[in-house]
Image (cartoon, rainbow, N blue to C red; front, side, top):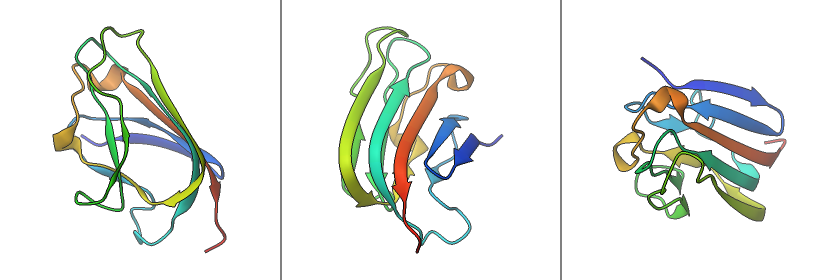
Length: 111
C-alpha cells in the first residue's frame, strides 16, 4: 500500500497508509517549502502524528501528542518556516490510517 497524496502549488493533503514514510518531493528530496500550517485530523483516539524536517533524524517541527478522540484535530501555524516536511511512519500512530488526514499549507519556493 502507499500514502495517498494530493498536492497543489501551495499545499498537500495526505492520507497515510500507516507503514510508508512521506517526504516532500520524493523524486529529488531537494525541494523545500516555506511552511505555513500543519493540521492533523486523527482517525481514532490514541492517534499521533510527528513531522520532522528533512529525514528521520531531523528536528521535530510538529508533534500532535496522543489525541483524545477522533474529533480532536490538532493544528500548528508557522510563519513561513523553511523546511522539507518528513513523516516517519514508525513514529506515528494511526488506528485506522485510511481515516486520518494530514494537511499542509506552504509557500513553495522557486528552487
